[in-house]
Length: 150
Image (cartoon, rainbow, N blue to C red; front, side, top):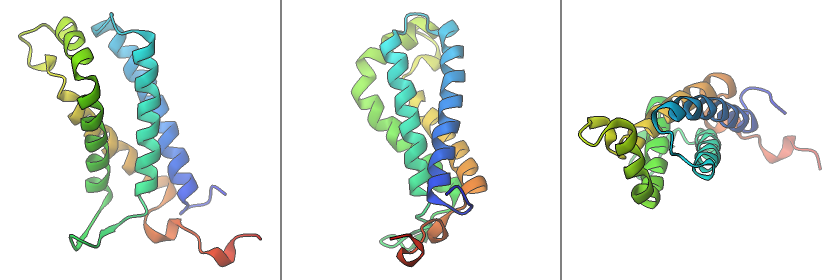
């Protein structure tokens, strides 16, 4: 079930690594942004676990047919992580902007909520590296129907 290469292994590694990294990040963020509610923290935890699963699933795609280009892990992971965090930021910008300004200071370059996109790209890079290293990548991760029990 968790053999390498395996799609299930990729997803499990992505979710577990995202859980650990998010818990570490939330623990560190409590010192910088003390006014973050537990619902916001729980939302971030579930969001990043979802990013881990999506990065794990997306690892079977190593070639983009419409663009006719290869998708190596170092491109695929940051693309997925950055894109998903950009979508998240569009939803939570009004809530996150004051928290970042209070935590870092209004004149700080770090007070911009758009750093969330870069954070997602870095997280996606690390997650896809781990998923590829442990779970493999490409069509080898997806077993064919004949090998499945009936």
